[in-house]
Amino acid sequence: MESRRLGRTQLNVCAAGVHASWRERDVDDARKTLTAAMERGVDVVIVDPAFERALEKIVGEVVRDLRLRDKAQIVTRVGAPEHPRAVQARVEESLRATKLEVLPFAVVEWDDRTFYEKLWPETRAALERLVREGKVLRWGIAPRPDSAMGTSEAIFELVVLPYSVLARGAEAIFASAKRHDAGVVITQPLEHGLLGGAWNRDTVFKDWRRETYKELAPHLAKIEKLRPLATRETDDLAELALRFAFGREEASVVAPSIRTRDQLETLVRAADGRRLSESLLQRVDEETGVVS
Image: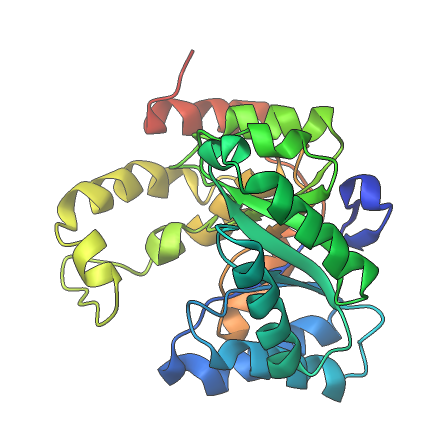
């Protein structure tokens, strides 16, 4: 798989990452897949304890079992920096759960309004203190699509943001991250599974997607427009979507949520460094309605 530079951290990492956002029922399969992924060279893993607290423990166990403490770049989301004490508490909870001596990356949720909050200077001082104390090695942000100001803060060396062929509203953030040489990790390149190609009119969700995708027809219509393009230069729709995300030059890592070996193989295939042709990208733009 291709390696890329992670912004000004000067780290070289595998371009393929994993977003650990599994539900409890998927944990056993996901653990096996994460182990296989890291054995294949994946070293960036995003974990969100607010999504499922047990995930941190699993990620920590896999890293220790494979003896990858010095190589693995675990990216832990610790929520919004609404108060210094809250951020510190979340960091310490994550250290206990993963049993790691230090969090390689801790990521705070960012809204530009936070930039003007009177608590921000105090919070920034707390983030710097956690680095000095050896609890966090580096900080990053997960900004709202319309909130690019945080990337100018020197303390943030990493930007984590959702982006896909169907959801591209992050151009200002990409531009700012490039200007400040921040590493960029793309999440949700498969749109929570929509671009995986397996959904149909009979699909029934038993998690949060039941509300988000209550009316499936409009979403499936978008997929049907892309499906004929998926076999031109790729094996399937998922590979097309992943290669589209890998094509962003600003992206250091593309980290979908995967839980099966087949999904891992698709990720590995898409991370080989081959880009989609300009003619295919133009057709994708036409079908997704972003033609200039």
